[in-house]
Length: 471
Image (cartoon, rainbow, N blue to C red; front, side, top):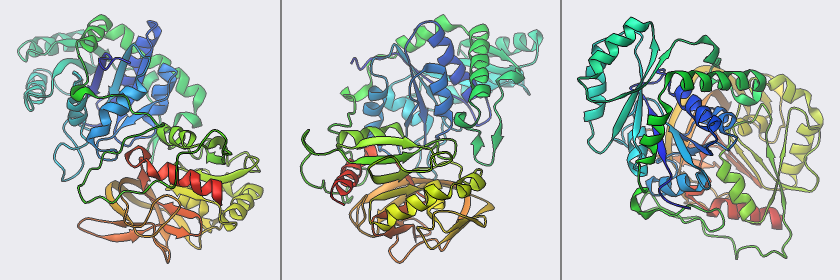
């Protein structure tokens, strides 16, 4: 594919400005024009990509310069945008907000520079008029390598308010590409970890996305936005698309110890182990590249729903349970006793099991007093404390995912606690100001709070599939 796919980054001065509404609405509006739209999200967010997928009919993909390393941002973008006419990238937090203590790393501005993409700034104008010009001027001039190509004014109160804003912005030299009024129908409900995922409110989500698309179509200059996207040029650095079949590794630290591949690549004649991947409303957090990597490594990936399926897929040789909201569905998960027993039996057999965050809770003995799978001798509960942030981690124990000493970067995002926080053989040693160990490695089980992006370390999926094949 061409490395010059038209693209825009939708950013804002701060969270809550309307990035998701504008980005999702713009994706829907472009799709309604007959364009094949590639949806992307900066950072580790799993929820917004679900709304992006509704708007475009394509899998929403994340671009995270911390988890995957800056070198993979361009290739992963081109992989996701293959065959598309235009790409829309929704930013994270404020435009220049990145990983804590790491400068611009993983910020929306950093990703925009890595992609060579123009930025459209979404400004909540509800409490300002002339001051908007100073705000936009500051963001547009802060980093000369970041090209702010236009502004979309959100939550504009009236025609007079719009007139005042436009007059002020004429002095900032940044064109106004859209003006949006308040529209309750585009609001999406939130709870303790952000927006409610699409899988839990599909009919309402479809209506909300349609309303977002209509609002953006009515209030924005789509021709100008498309022209801005087409002026982006080639992705810097001569990037080629990432591929799960032969993913290149891009280390983020010179002292990183890599997970060695476990033998030769599988041939067509070798059996494809069935790897069951948890899905449904309780387990919605996953990166599309994980399934692609497992498939490329020779596995047959089958999705199942722990809320409804009473058995694991036939022939299951390995199990992947990602993130989500088991605490919201604890009663239903607990009530599905046949599946809980099946998971416990599979883990007890020594079969490979990889669990992240929600998966960790599901494998515990109990969650908020309700019986779970009992694979781990640990209990989990909801708390008032939000644990959030990037983590630099090293594998402490050899496991089905990584050799001891393998260094990976992860992300934590939860309001739960597990006691004890680690087993006799911890999964990860978390580096930094407060070093600690966390997670569990027991027989074929690797369970941890850390969300990781396997594209950063291709040996992870390959190793897991090989263990499924030989266990």
